[in-house]
Image 1 (cartoon, rainbow, N blue to C red):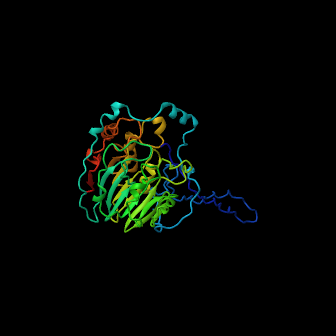
Image 2: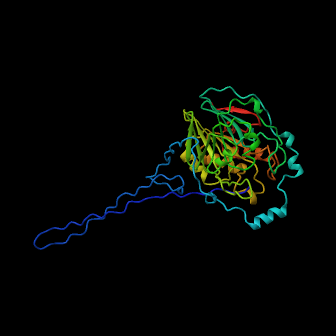
Image 3: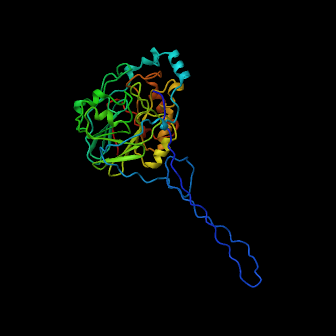
Length: 384
């Protein structure tokens, strides 16, 4: 996996300057007066979350959120989303180096700590409609309870996914232990985030929120309530708002569909204004501060901290632990829960390294220890 998303530039309009007509006296012998100063109409700019971060007294730091779009509407999208990349896809030189250096896997010493990976499955907490709770099922899969809904993020309950060894920790929540699934959000189409065997377990009328260009994949599997969104668009389900936001990543599932569908993260907001941000897969970059401005007051950020080594290959598309902490700060998030580590071996770092590094980075940043929710697989936390 190896890329990032691009910034789309909004259009700004300016009002042309208007000049006042010079005044002149009208005696018999006209005495010309100096022209009055030209008065310029104030320049106004529409709020643009994609513009460079230049302070302006006229621009609101919190652009108004988009109006929710209709659920499950059929839409026409561009053939490709290559223009959303924030870094180029790897060229021939990078691919040759990757082939020359072989499989990107930890050393034997790096794998030796697999038995020490934190895994503590427990029953899901009891919640009411005004409680927000999260349970880490492993990798990027969360059971999010918000606004009375049960929402799954990038659900992968399979033991294996294409191209990787079997998972090294068990799924943290048994499928049969789940309450009724009210909605699913998908960040992008890579196999470790979009798992067909898991999704086949869902009723075909489950509401699904997916990136632009991905609904066809679900329609072919007879899902009927698929809402696909572009960046900065939103939809609502039973009072819970689903905002689709940018990420520094890419998409590919077959040999011929590179960047044919979009990628991104999700901000879930309940009727009381409690917010959970789910990043999906992403590198570090400018999008985090813009998401924080567009969706202020994030209570919990679910951020990836693994699959980052070697950096020359993965830095554009996967945060390392220190970058994830910076991302949480850029977002203005009150709490952070690490994910995307300790489940599948996708890269070369030792399996426990992401956890030790994120704890050290959090402490170095001076953040309260209780606000780092470094959960074992299967554990839950409730927002208080």
